[in-house]
Image 1 (cartoon, helix red, strand yellow):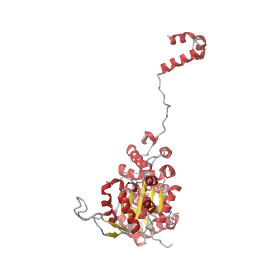
Image 2 (cartoon, one colour):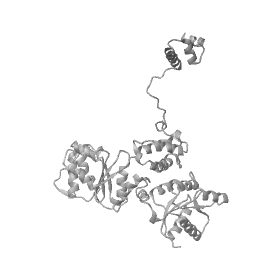
Image 3 (cartoon, helix red, strand yellow):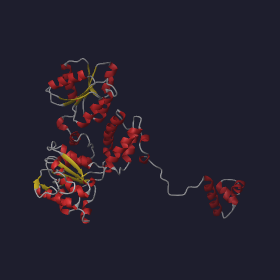
Image 4 (cartoon, helix red, strand yellow):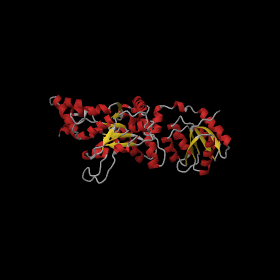
Length: 441
């Protein structure tokens, strides 16, 4: 079988074994990632595309068996190989049940390692040519974008279409939907990924400083301008300038942005000399820019210049099938950060998350998972979730009376119904006449 160059993650707290594996794999023409702990391995799995996982079992803090079970659940397409210095029949059965395709005992020869790797790849179902776009973007964007819903797939499709050109893109979506992540995916998954990516929140810059911050200024241009200074446009040269909350840009800045898009040149504040720039502009907004155009607070010509390609990021309520994947991502992140362990979420707690409408979108989900990790003792249960997520019994708006007062009111209504006939009223109340008299007293 011809060996193919693949990415192999090796995990072992023994540095000598780690280096031995590295040398063997390098000689076989594989590319390797090394991790001395499960915590390091998780970051590699999140940020890189791995074709094979090789792990030791006996490791401090979190052992390799937990890593196997976690990888089998979250990365089922990756074949797993176990290397251990403590072989046993029970141990072999346990790691095989956890998802390992083979079990290699230390010490081992290079040929034995080679045979196990070939066996692992033969059993693996996913090949490099079969990788889905979503997984590629996930790897290129440091694992920040995850999803498998149709709505998410539509966004990924647009990212794939624009990533290798410098067409101007506008990203629309509610707050918390991940518009900046989409912009980063466009940049880092394409051929310009080695160039700068500069993110600017227009809403965070005071209006009187926006022009200077974006385009730069010359010495003496205004009070406090004690030197020549480049702006964000110059910093993004050759790459991508991401303008978040573009609706917050002042009309003066909008005018200069329009010129920059039309003429591919900018002018520093205080200068008369224009300079050519080679950048891609990606803008984002959660506002209705068409309404802003009607209100004369946003230039119509700039809007259409920005909207060469429009990407609408769906709210989380429209992609609820992605909640398990997003929750798993945040559990991995905060479980390791706060509890130094791998955490899972119960099916019941996941159901609670899936039925919520998520007005704060992915940002709100991340905050909820972060809080739940802190509150939990291990598995995230319904009890660890905030009360407002759980089913609440809604009572109608009414003044509630003590039981004694409610009884008095009911007796009064019965007496009215019987026109004061106590015998009839007692029969309706299923009490004797003496008891009724006592209640009336």
